Image 1 (spheres, rainbow, N blue to C red):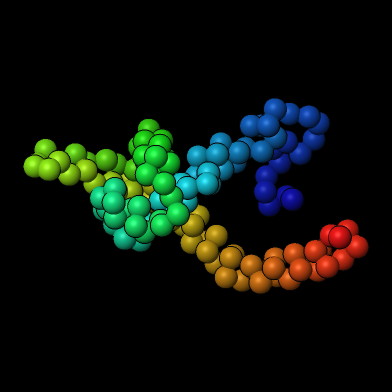
Image 2 (tube, helix red, strand yellow):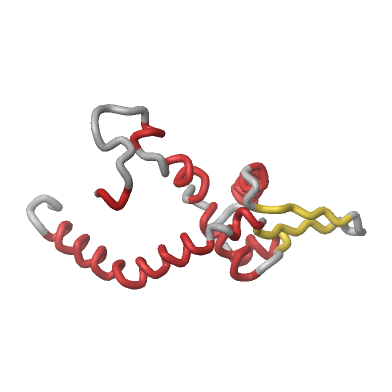
Length: 131
């Protein structure tokens, strides 16, 4: 636990101070934020329909809401082009790109550990506590 920092290690604290990364987790790891940021980071500037195709299971309403929130948080930049028909494109901002090392570490962790997680789930589900 030492490597995680000493904040909230003793006594009781508000959730934000008990876990100082909570605000980051709320911003970056909500249900659809990660796939949107990942897509914009790996594929570059995208139109709404292109993003929706890349993230096949997201509804247009939810994609609109998440893009607005990401734009509000400064992680995504929206560009409006007054053409006929109008064109809107989204791209990851510099602030959003600064998350790349975090995502790289998570991808590395996933590659090295998700098989262990699956084995633990199988063992738990097959054990007396999982019944």
